[in-house]
Length: 344
Ligand code: BGC
Image 1 (tube, rainbow, N blue to C red):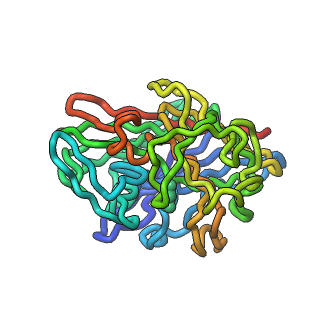
Image 2: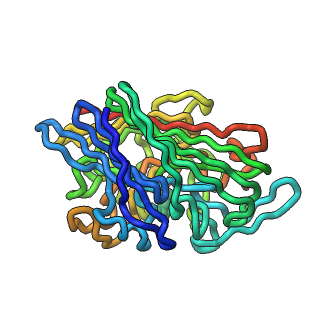
């Protein structure tokens, strides 16, 4: 394993932003950076041996400071929508920024994706990684409690990238961290409609006209939402108004890692298995992505990438029947997602 830390740029206030490059001996090289604790690139060989970068992003750091839809970033304090930007906890009502119509989305105006984290690199024979730390102050974006969070990216010789999340709080607070990488296993030149996807679930959360779960859990059998057997993402996408932007309910929500999804690019053979401890997987087919100039001058648009966001269900703070997202003092928040790469 090899690991190198370098300066990538500076934040708005001049704070340096580091980029960390980690490689293993089978040709996988990943980069992540301290701005947004974001995944910047992941180079992986295909069947013909040629390596491609399979995550969308930008060549220059300054492009990450311009508006973009959470490309590669860690999303928090609460990923997904909070209806009307409101929730009650301990008898108090909290009003959050409504940055998505009437909803609060992905932590608000200055979420975890737009702050600089402090990196600490480590490495030994089997695994090399980086721990990104930050303290989210009490009241940040109106959330209660000082939250100390760590996001750990790690690559190993078994071609697995792990992202491990941990956090502690000084007051009860909702927390739902995820990663917002747009994957494109073909290297980003064509849309992801030609990727095959299987999700380890046949249940999803239907949403209302504001994209907020309605509280029901529906079966996917025989519908365009069904990915319980591998099928092309593009096969039925036209039958889903707007495209896929739905949370799948993963079986056996508990704290152990279990299979969540497999994404495959038939032409190159590049395959990514996703394992997670989280109860849900938000499938988002970049429906709103529009004309952004990304790496190597490639224009990203609708369906240029696919996000497989392992997380708790959106709007859980307002839906008592969903698994709780409340973290209390003296408890430890722990979640992990593993992305395993292979050629099939
Ligand atoms: C959400 C989409 C949203 C997108 C923003 C996704 O996680 O599910 O509804 O438009 O993030 O990039």
